[in-house]
Structure formats: C-alpha cells, structure tokens
Image 1 (cartoon, rainbow, N blue to C red):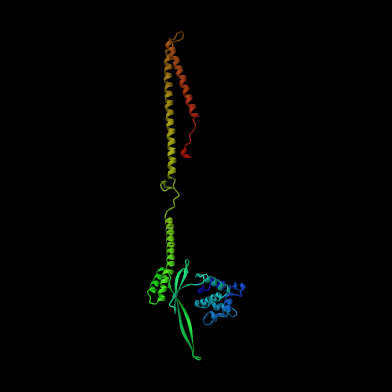
Image 2 (cartoon, one colour):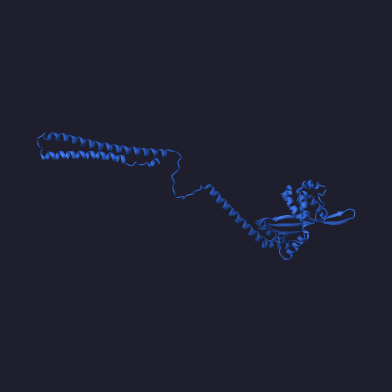
Length: 345
C-alpha cells in the first residue's frame, strides 16, 4: 500500500535503505521528500548494472519529487528493487550473507530455499515463517534472442518470471502429487522433497493456526454469553422481594399503626369508665347503708346495741377504702409512661 499511495510508510522504508549506502547525509534524508532526490542521485550511476532499461526519473532541480509521485506503482517497485540490489552489495550486507552461508543453514531473513528444478528453465523455491505463513514459488527463466541489424550480432536476453504455486496445506499437497507423478526424475525429486521437507512444516503451521482460531472463537463465545446474561451480585438461590417505587405500602403501614393506637386508647377508656362506675356504685350503696344505719342509731340518751356499733364502723372503713382506691388509680394514670409508636419512626 505504501508503494501504491507513496505515503509515509514508503518513505520510511526507502530512508532506512538509503542510510546503509554511503555517503550518508542524514539531515537531507529527514527533510520532507528530499529522500527522493537522494534516491535518484544514488541509483543513476548504478541503474544499468542492477536494473533493465533506463531509469524512469532522474534528479532535476526538485522536479524528480513530483515525477516520482506521479509514477505507476510498478515503476516505484522497480526503484525499490534496484535500491535493495544496491544495498545488498555493500560490505556489511555481503559479510552478513557470507557468514550465514558458511554455517550451512538457510536463513529466511535474506534468501529463499531452493528445492530444485529441471535444470533448464524451471526452479522451485520454498519461503516463509510462522508469522507470515509459507509459500512455494516457481521461477521460470525465459530466454529471448535479439538480433542487431547492422552488425548482425545475436544477443540473448534472460527474463525471470515468478509464479506462486502454493500458499496453504492443500495446495502444497496438490503440487507434491503432481511433481511426484511427473516423468522427469528431477521434477519427481522436487515433489519428494516437498513431501519430506515442506509439507511437515506447513502442516504444523496449519494446526497452530487452527488452535488459535478455535481459541479466539471460544473467547468470543464466552464474551457474548456474558454480555447477554444479566449480571448477578448475589447468590442465585436467594429470593428477593421485587422493589416497588410507590408509597402504598408506607401509607398502609401508617394507617395500621394509627388504628392499633386508637383501639388501645379506646380499650383503656372503657376500662376506666367501668372502674369509675363500680366505684360510684359502691359509694351509693355505702351511702344507703349509712342512711339506714343512721336510722337505726338510737336517739340521744339511748344506747345503741353492740351489733349496730360494729356495722357503723365497718361502713366507715369501707368508705375510706373506696376513697383511697379512687385517688390511687388517678395517680397511676398520671405516672404511666408514654409508649412510642414504632410504626411512625
């Protein structure tokens, strides 16, 4: 996308490669689009050796910036390939490649692994890693003969074409079967090498990807279930009374409390009236008895019988007791502690 749009990503890639090709002027590289001018100046003398044809854009007093941005993405890709070729010819890059080649191991950082070919035009290359995946490429060398009319000189021009043969496990297995069943022994050997070396690596990578996909799907399923399920902060077996946001229950509670208080007061008043009535009845009977006793009292100069004297004393004693009871009941009502209605709190 950087090559297509010629954005900041494309600029960062070219600047990183240009810093590895002496002479280096970091100040000019960091100045906006000045790296395009540096690119054209460095590639101009090397272009015939590292690329075909003429260089599309050359340094020309700043006009190369607009010229580079107006190029087709394929032409910008040729610029990048030529820059990579020039960077690979520097001493530090050559030493890095040589050191890794002497170890006898194929380092995917700087080269693909050649599986073989027919020895003439076709070669098969295996490339990839666990991050980007694995691919099988087919390289075809097409040679064309050019004839110069004046000197009658024949020159051969080679053109390399790359094709992507396999990008997943099924395609690797298909290519291996086709090459193994081919008549040329060289191609059959390539098919056998794909089955023994490439397919086990691709199969391991394929299983790893499947596990990652299943794990991701499981996590997404758990998240979706948790989102759809209501959150509960209490135990599921506990039953709670549904909340109501009206004052009906509160008003009912106040009304019941008032009614209970009214019934209690009414019962107390009825008891007091009954007690007063009984006391008054006893007073009336005592007064009647007193009147009767006075009637029975002998006149002056006459002595009352002993039985009459005892009756008079008993009547006076009852009168004093009833008067004391009335006074004591009134004091009790005055000293009675007021009870607080808990329903009103």
